[in-house]
Amino acid sequence: MNNLSGRGRVTGLPAWDRCAVMGVVNVTPDSFSDGGRWFDTTAAVKHGLGLVAEGADLVDVGGESTRPGATRVDESEELRRVIPVVRGLASEGVVVSVDTMRASVAEQSLAAGAVLVNDVSGGLADPAMIPVVADAGAPFVVMHWRGFLQGGNVKGVYEDVVAEVTDELRARVDAVLDGGVAADRIVVDPGLGFSKEAGDDLTLLAHLDRLRALGHPLLVAASRKRFLGRVLAGPEGSPPPARERDAATAAVSALAAHAGAWAVRVHEVRATADAVRVARAVEGARTAAPATPDERGAEGTR
Ligand code: PMM
Image (cartoon, rainbow, N blue to C red; front, top):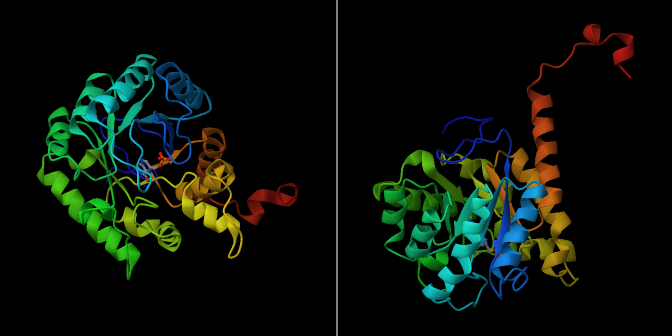
């Protein structure tokens, strides 16, 4: 992995000197945390620009909800939702990622100015995806989701979630490499909440170092997810709604940045933009040589 404070960089994308912030624009009527809010092209582009103004480094545009039980959207409808928003944001100079499991949507998004393909199926949903990404020379997010590894929306049952997710991700990365995507354009993502229970998500977050050992930049997407609702509710309480999980999301962003994540994917950008900057400042302070008591002198001890 190319080193940039150990978190790596992705060829084909700007190099950030800290954990990058990926803001989310879901152009869907039914995403679990923000469905329906940016369903119109103009509103979606405006929202994406607003996320950039708040500190997003890149914007992830998706036209299909992946919440449990969601039915798949038609290809033509996904294209209708996504392409104008990708084009609108890219034409304003935004670094755009497309969140899709369809090769056609990826291909047309890249033509419309997207520079990263984010596929929650890790290239499994559409056999044409990896060839399209490889031919375009585009960076590719490979996410872990047993629903696609094993077929159907399976419940993940893990004995050792970190070892199993790491091994299964490694196998997907190998397949993506075999398909011709360059190693320095591959990002890995543990897929928090995808065929995983709250405890699994927390265990994965506690061991991001082992996912980083895969040797690819790591994307962490915890934003507003169910496991945060469970943490905030405590053992007996009922979870707060998704949109009341943004402070918890920012806390995960700080932890992920500290653990060396390449990027975090979030719906509410402002707090996370602060969190990654604080993490970067702390990282800078750790690598600066500590002053000795003599160098500090009496004044410096205050
Ligand atoms: N989660 C969602 C959508 N896209 N992409 C990646 N790479 N990783 C994720 O964990 C992920 C994703 C679901 O959340 P949303 O519907 O609120 O966007």
